[in-house]
Length: 341
Ligand SMILES: [Cu+2]
Image (cartoon, rainbow, N blue to C red; front, side, top):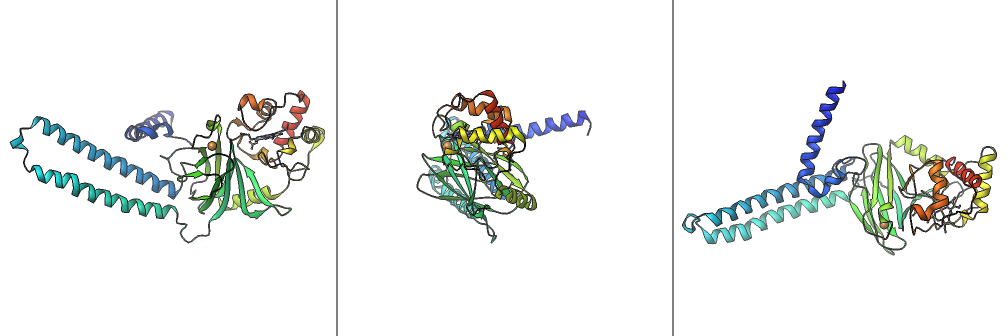
């Protein structure tokens, strides 16, 4: 495709996007990109989009019809507006009963479809919301050593297979939402909710906490990575392994400084004495797409900045800043953690 047709193709897509967004005011902000209810990547998100479009279009048509009637009633002479009582019964009773019942039946059918796994055994994933990050557990997968596989801020799922996400919260109410893949589900302390996600198109989709949960609610995002089934199995095998041994003096120094600084009281790195549970598991943190729940890119520089100034970057989060660590220690810890793929 040459540059000109590329541009006009882009413009055509812009027009279509703008038309859709224009009709759906509120959703206009998430018109494109990895977090978009308007660009579903799985059948559940598609069913929700269809339902939304039908409700918006149906509501729009009825609104315009009623407004036109009201306008006509204002200007028309009474004798030119026959059948007064029929309008009340037809428009006020029969019409809403028929349309609302039909819509209700359709909505029930969609809701049923959203919780249906089509006879396939779903993959189970448990996600717990914390202020302000996500703990992710695969209850049916054991790591080398026997415990349940635990990670954070990222779900990796196989394409095509339904995933049953069991959500709860550790502190306040959060809400689990990946618009490209499925519906939205409240995460309530002491209570488990379930929702089914289906990812059909491999890719990385963004999720976001959708229930205000305190100062850093906006910095509480996560990724869902949809992988072809064989790549998913490879990921699982790698994830089950403990952290790689440090290579070279700098990585070794980084691991030692990490343990010395007390990071292990909150973080687990399998294969080292660090076994804390108050913060994200860091056994394979280097392989994640972002740091601190979508707050920073996952680079050694950003990681060093996070350790030195976590409270500056994400005020009031549950990790203290470590301004006492010298530049060499900081750098070594960051290089070691980034090596843990
Ligand atoms: Cu939240």
